[in-house]
Length: 74
Image (cartoon, rainbow, N blue to C red; front, side, top):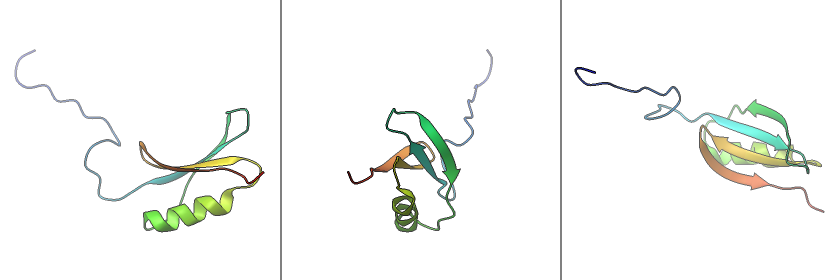
C-alpha cells in the first residue's frame, strides 16, 4: 500500500461529548435491554442508571468505557 493508510473507527477516538448507555442485564447474564440516557454529565447518568435498577442489574457505559454496575438489593 502506498502512502499512509488511516483506519477510522466510528465512535472511537476524540469525542466532543459523552454518550451514556444503560445496559439491563438479567440474572442469567443475558442483555435484556439497552438504551441511551439523556444525561449532561456522568453524575446525572449514574443517577439515572441507579433509578433503573429493579430485579435486574444495570450497567452504565460511556461509549466503550465501562463506568459502573448497579445490582438489585437482595
